[in-house]
Image (cartoon, rainbow, N blue to C red; front, side, top):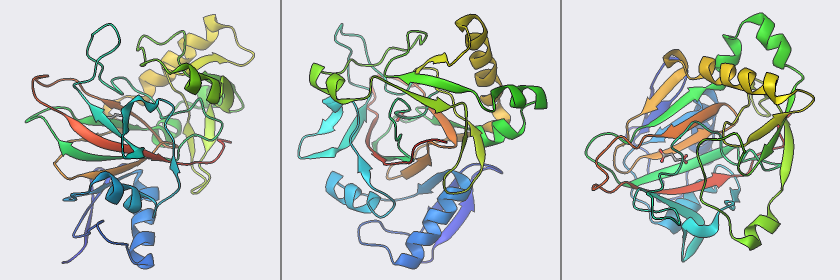
Length: 279
Ligand code: SIN
């Protein structure tokens, strides 16, 4: 089987065909995939059919799995793998669509995940794309004045920001006690593997910018988000069954789209890989 790499946009996303993740990769191929991922931030390996244990084994070749904060969506016999489903509900009965708003994963952790991996199992006929915006590109296209303002600023991240319009599913008391209550991260982070700088914001988790009033901080955060989510910074992933998609949380914001018929099922496996402390 020949292995092909194809860029999916001029800044984000690379598609790989002709690779099977059912068996261990050679170190040469593993390194080629990892390099392509670092360069493109979203690695899409097509045509996989992995059960949770096989997915875990495949993912471990790229990093160390990380337990998610919310344990509710764990796969019972393989708890490091979670699921994403459009059939889940909040406690009050409303439908819960995980990730339906721009965010980066678990930024309220001292060591947030470098990567998140989704593996598509059941998809709606149309819609349900994942949108990614490249925050390194957004940093590079920011006007010089704003760049100078945000370099050196730090923000406090919490599990659920009081400013967020999107509500997360609550944690159990046990998990609440286990996770950090709040952490402080730079607003511009330097990628620990590529050295590239990127804006590091998270509308659902940032509670405050340190040393700045909310009157100044919230409009600044909104302005950064508006700048970042322009189409020119975006790669929009149209899912195919069997896609294994690994993205770089150090470079991207992402969001799910609830724009399809909810009678249809959307179901994916999910896990994250340990990252470094942002600096
Ligand atoms: C997520 O935020 O991890 C979910 C993305 C998606 O379901 O498209």
